[in-house]
Image 1: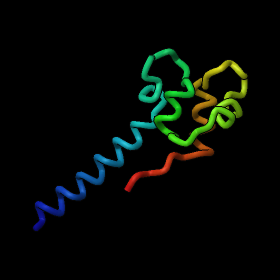
Image 2 (image 1 turned 60 degrees about the vertical axis):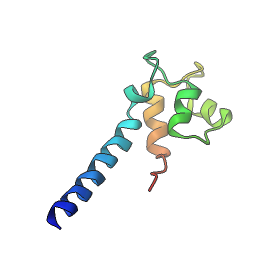
Image 3 (image 1 turned 90 degrees about the horizontal axis):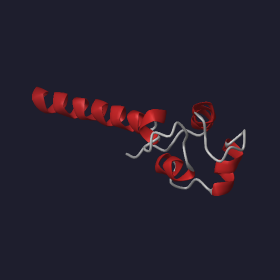
Length: 82
């Protein structure tokens, strides 16, 4: 029984760690361009609209810098699947 409980707790921690890693800038920047495209951002926020993305792109460069991404992430944490 203890072994099962430890396994369940460990699985919970590893799942939480994977969810956190999935929103890390470097993990989301899959093409390693140094910016986050709309398509890359939609992996974190599947319902992200182009208008919302453009609003997050403060400098209007067409992509999110790490600072813009971090600010959007802080204001809009992704839903955690349960």
